[in-house]
Every structure is written in structure tokens, then in C-alpha cells.
Length: 127
Image 1 (cartoon, rainbow, N blue to C red):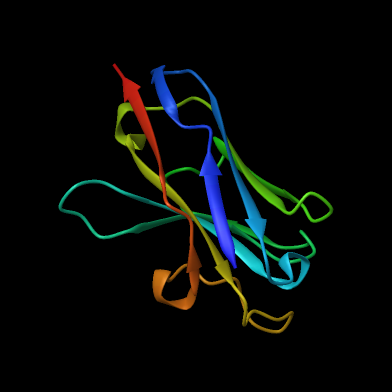
Image 2 (image 1 turned 180 degrees about the vertical axis):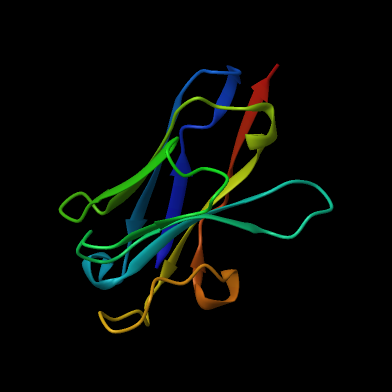
């Protein structure tokens, strides 16, 4: 499974960005997908996750109400719409695939659960 993230950039506080992650290989429609972010010297931080069928979503408290995760299984993409961006949202954002998720297990917020990772896309929010 290969993941390619895109859509990062520089935006002013209060603005919006939409990240996309396109998958190739594997069976995308059966994977739970997540977004994480990381700043220099810090651990990778959970942002949002979505189940394979889009029936379940979970968000970090810090982004709840501002970010929206979605997916299109036909296009093999997962998106992260980021609104009302804040300087503290500045980070490299990574998409990730959890191939072992299933309906009875809660969506994982732990980076170690995800087996495949995209290369990351930089998001910078200026104040």
C-alpha cells in the first residue's frame, strides 16, 4: 500500500486548507484511515480517523468542530478539511492506513496501530 498526501501550504490564522491522501495498491475500501501530525521534537499526534465505510469518525479534542475527515472509496482518497486554522495547527500532516481494523474495534488513535504511512505534507498557519 502506498499513500500520497497533498494539499498542504501556508495559510493565515482563521483560514482553511484541504488535505488529500491517495492510495495505491491494497484494498483501500477495507482499511480504516487516519491523519496524524508532527512538529519538530514532538511525538506524532493523532488528528482524526475514519472507518472503512465512513460510518465512524473520531477526532482529537484540539480539532473537533474545526476539522472534517471524509473518504471516497471509489477514488481511493481520504480527505481532511481544516477550517478555522490556528498557528498551533502548524505541523507536518501524515495520512495512514490501518489494515486490521474491523467493525467491533474502536477506531485507533495510536500511531503504532497504522501500518502504512504517506510521506507527509507541511501545513503552516501564520498568526
